[in-house]
Image (cartoon, rainbow, N blue to C red; front, side, top):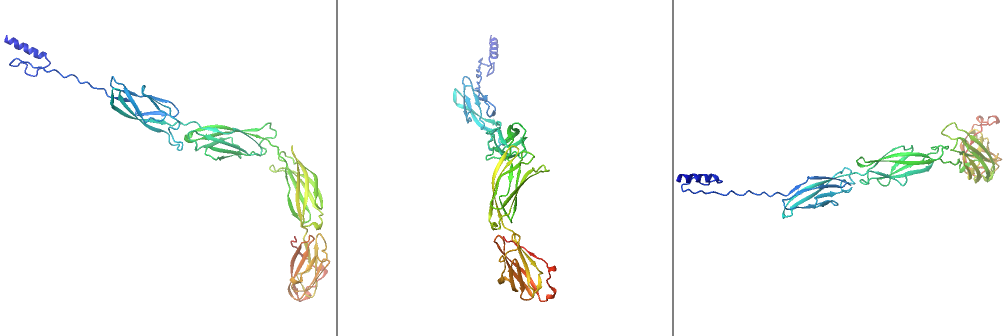
Length: 471
């Protein structure tokens, strides 16, 4: 019986989770311990989002952020540093933003492209207002360039031959208002120019079409199409076509003549006329030609041209002469009225021309040699081409300014002079011309004592002419 009791105790010990003491104690007592309950692990607060979010200017972008907190709580999210215009829905955890076109890049620095914005996410549980987790996120905004545009008051400009055309255009960039911009053109006519305007985005085209650019037989204006390629920062481009319409212009004949002249006692005035509209010269017809004094004669002729660069012309020659000597030195007015008829236009002109006749210079013929015997009288012939000979009193010898002169006389255009002694001498002539002007002119001579070597004979006289400006 005692043995049976021990066996039962042994079986009971094995049946239990474990025995702390000897399963077969001497007194027959068994001690057992209860195992500890399993430990419960609380799930953490989780923010499951990328460290960088990409947005593009002008485009709506949205991201759903994943958050989790232990049940039965619900996530409570706070966003710090959200850019202007961006929104966050705390119910759906959706971050939405349409960045403006100034959110990235730099209008003053074309090399600046992207821009970063930093935000912070704070996550709590609705059941625990103390415990939270935090995550920093970078929002990168990509710069989006908007297209360039070309603007002008008018894309089509009109002008005529010989009239300047000025065409202003502006290159507009919403991202880089100040550029820099570059223009490339195709179809720009020879002679046209491109100049910068008053602002960095303005360009000025200039063109003055020459005469003959448009065929005179062409119906309607001639059209020029200029293709303009504008290039802005970061190789932004736009192409625009400009249209110029050029019309043919009938030109008036071109007439040229002097306005003032100073002549001696007659003048030939040339009036020239050309017509650039055709290859034949225009016609000149005088309605009236009235001189103040004197007589006129007009001859008209056509002058052809064999040089392609020189137009044929019509030349009217106006001969004006027989002016009275008393009018010399006084301005004379010639009033002309004439018409020039060209290809399809006729121009009538009234021109006044002022001519001053100075009169011819007097001539002094010295019928002598420069060296003469002092015991002989020398003769001078003094003449004026308008009054031959000069009347007595028109030629004088001034004894106060004459040297080595013992006798001087002027009569009927002749002067007689005798030297005082051998050696050099001077005769001061005072000559009054037909127009009233007075000229003083010295004549230097040398008298010699030996008269045998300088006998004066009619057949060996040596005329000597002394001229000067008597105006």
